[in-house]
Amino acid sequence: MLFAPNRFVMDWVNQKYLRRIEEVLKDLNGGQAPRVVMKVGSAPRENEPVQRSVETKPDPAALDETGRSVTEEEKSVAATVPAQSGGKPQASSHRTSGGQRRDVQVEGDIKHQSFLNETFTFDTFVEGKSNQLARAASMQVAENPGGAYNPLFLYGGVGLGKTHLMHAIGNEIVRRNPGAKVAYLRSERFVADMVKALQLNAINEFKRYYRSVDALLIDDIQFFARKERSQEEFFHTFNALLEGGQQVIVTCDRFPKEIVDMEERLKSRFGWGLTVMVEPPELETRVAILMKKAEQANVKLSSEAAFFIAQKIRSNVRELEGALRLVIANAHFTGSEITPPFIRESLKDLLALHEKQVSIDNIQRTVAEYYKIKVADLLSKRRTRTVTRPRQVAMSLAKELTNHSLPEIGDAFGGRDHTTVLHACKKIVELQETDPGIREDYQNFMRLLTT
Ligand SMILES: Nc1ncnc2c1ncn2[C@@H]1O[C@H](COP(=O)(O)OP(=O)(O)OP(=O)(O)O)[C@@H](O)[C@H]1O
Image (tube, rainbow, N blue to C red; front, side):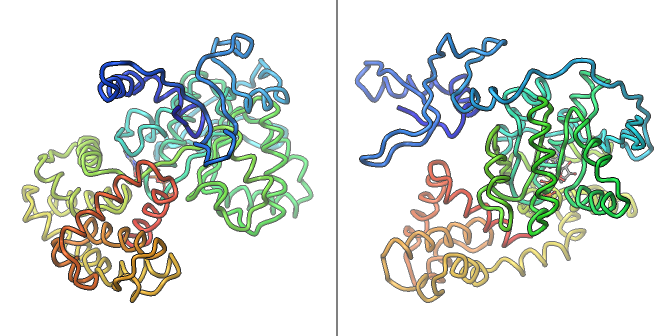
């Protein structure tokens, strides 16, 4: 029995990996193919019943109009969500020089502006292991807004492409249906608009406006923290949109349950649809992103140069882009070719900052503080679980974020052997695949240490 955190992941694994899984199991099982059953839910601990489980085999009575099977969870949502009303309002559209589409439409007194950035599309988004799932989910939503994946909740560290994907969905919805009314805004803007509406005694117009869109895209929802009135208002808007079959897309820097100072009912609503993480890109994806960005800027970038930058800048895509821009500008001014020595010189200050910030010392302090243990524990011989796991995480971070060798890292952790460090690195890679808690912690550390 295999468990997937949600229907989307289950379908994804079903399509892409089930055959391979079956083959491997067959090999391991002496040539006999075992029956693989997949369910939505989590593996039960001992003596615990399986929760929220839905078999992959579609129940004919539980198929939606497209023939897709409907989960129990979806059924309960669907019961409160009427089919999307037709006759969507038409919008006229013109473009601004900054690539922003300004859809202008009069809604009562309020003009509709989509604020979509036309340069953020699926075409310009580079797919890699780290964002594959998020991209696929986004595409599904763009193809079927207001459908099964509503709301779509994209989360992950800074500068990893959440906003880009969100705009890509909006742009794709409008491309497929030019009359669709899509509104992108950062959560601060929602708050500001609401405050203004309250001051002007125009809260009803505010409500009407935000409830009239076909897709509402709210970026960086974590900024709603501690803003109770905004949360309240958003909660009602959110419900109204879901009930109207209109799409809601939200981005956040963390998993819904971990948002602090946010109402529980709102957090739980976020989990109703599909929640997907965008992870930091691995080396190959960073290289591919650099090549794509260089191509967009009409600059020839050798793969050696791209590889060099990608190896040095590991924090996030925004920094990666910034570094590339700096290199291109320098090359432009000096008429130089972009080679690794030239890049090293161009990014001197940036690299110094990175190298200065990420030291083993710094990693140890950050990890100890995060897990509420002492740095001395990390260096000690103690082998209790509360200490060994953080120690392994810290060693793995030291390997990934510094240029120290395995023996040097071992030395820095109370004189351990380099094989212990190697084992820790492997263990953490493994755990990141199987344990969402460790994966989350690791992403948090990458963010804390590199931005
Ligand atoms: N996979 C990708 N392919 C191409 N460009 C990308 C990719 N991921 C991120 N970018 C680019 O990196 C920059 C930062 O991305 P974006 O603003 O979407 O990050 P974010 O996750 O929303 O960050 P924040 O949480 O700070 O808002 C953008 O210019 C975006 O185009």
